[in-house]
Image (tube, rainbow, N blue to C red; front, top):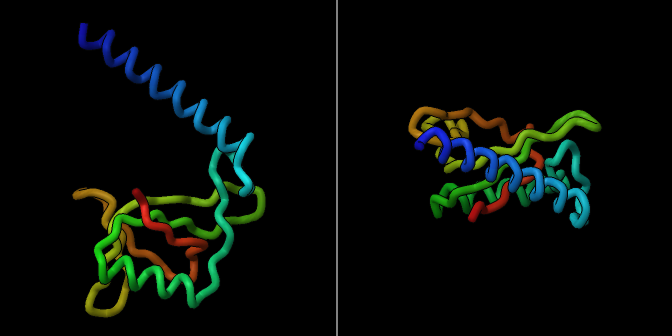
Length: 112
């Protein structure tokens, strides 16, 4: 019985993901590559300001990294921290931590 529920849940999740991707591709004002919305490149001053706000207020943020043309950019969600040396560290979960290079960022948004 449990495996049947998992199968139904996984199938429903996959279907809803496909519907969400199709909706983004059809109705988004922003370009979409492989189902991923590509946000515009933020100017440096705006990236710096948004990063500082995220650090000060402990916001959950969505970071989008630069990518080659016609390649979907990587988008990750987590909480930013800064170490003593000034490196940005993104905590995505208890098991996953990433060092973030400011120069590779395309955009920073507050995740809801």
